[in-house]
Length: 145
Image 1 (cartoon, one colour):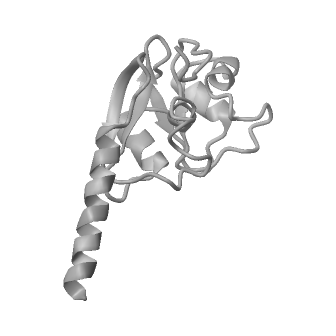
Image 2 (cartoon, rainbow, N blue to C red):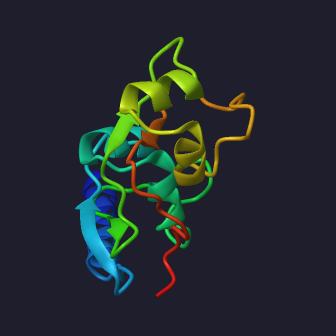
Image 3 (cartoon, helix red, strand yellow):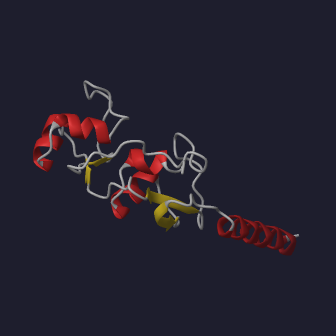
């Protein structure tokens, strides 16, 4: 019975590896990443200089809204051609939208435009969230070509 369970686990791991290899990235994907054990969306965002919003926006067909469906070996897109903000900041306790924008040397409006998940009064931001803090405006961060 034990050898049967090991064979089942091995088959499942093999199937996941095949799925990961067959992941299709958008044709306009500039950067990609292969999910590692223990990864979360925020951890990937921090390590790969991609905003939490951008990671979700360019992978809408791959990553669910609470980012609970990542699996080891999965290939995900980090940024799209002409839409890849890789100038990021990870929010710390006591940060505000104003302080993040000021420290990055950008207008608050640029910060809000590049981080459309943030509401206009900045009441929905949280520590460890990764933001785009580029002075360049990035609009239409979607995985459409």
